Length: 518
Image (cartoon, rainbow, N blue to C red; front, side, top):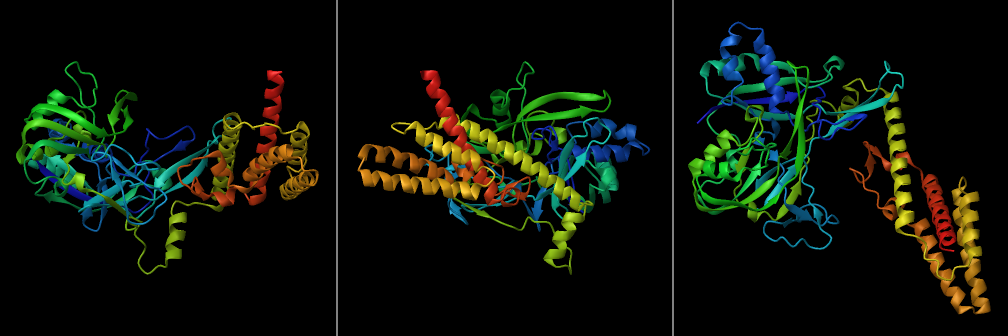
């Protein structure tokens, strides 16, 4: 078996390693792990200026030397990317039962994808999951004419990551250990003081990485394979094909291999070639955490399982891609439990408040940065609301039935004239409906009373219900936008004003539709 160097790194300053697959125009997201390519880049640059580099260069860039991704650790417990394939009832909290789609493909009504954070460890029938907290800063492109704002995300300081480097040459291992020590700089934003990391330990370990999660006995007929890193294989024609069953069958030494079921997602992996000075073609890969239920004829031996975990599968294995684990007792998982141990390490002797201040100022974050971020978040959230309002008007038009045009006109006049005084506008609409219902009762006009009552119920429901729930707006965090509480972006009066605007849009859309029908 290959020998593995195990290293533990703590980011002493904010760490940003751009995630091209999720970054958008004006916003750079960060990976929640340290990719093997980042460690390889550091090692190559550090060794390139030393004598004898030409001798070890060939071995350094071969598949025999593999730089694995570094993932979060809690104490001495190594975490792995959270597996896919589970569903939950979002209304429940704490430790709760989850549904495993591999055991029963019939997902219960109301169940959604289970939230399992970025990392987890498996213990008995429970997944314990954790996440990495991030911060962000706002910048402005002062050298460009438009001077657009852009936002950069980063991992908060204080996290510890454990990674591995597979080496086959003893001399190369010594060279890597000589540079992977003390303080190193990783990622982007170095000129702004980001990326400073401390290498706590770096030495050989006598085992395959993450073997504590693998099965310990031969498997007959079926197994569950999870991807520890992004993975893709090539077929005989050299085309990317996800999993190449023929090649995988030979590596497992089994017959008639098939994928019975899978819980998988894909991601576009991009890169940059410094020699050519340009981007390399993007590669679609299965995302880490994807799980495949494989069936076959024969015995998948422990030796073959260890070889598969040791060598990996697919392309770009020397950068950390293609790592897999054959999970033990995956089908027995029934519960999930969240943890808060993954938070950044506090400074000894400091209060929690002082540590929070450190996290907010460690990157030189100024008050005006927060103000700018709040402005951007408010603008973004308002656009989301306006977009959802337009969609709601089309998908949920007024049920006019026997509602008189005068009733529509009255409510439209209230919603329009009181738009900038929403409290008074809502009160005026309520008084109008109360008086209208009393008038109907007095004149005993049963049919009209029914039409006004249904119209009243529809309007008052919009005014009383939460606007976000009415419009079914979904954001990454339920109560936050760009890390800011939604209650800080819009006060209740502003939300009432938007509700009045929605009523105006509904009535005008109905009037326009009626004219077109005529």
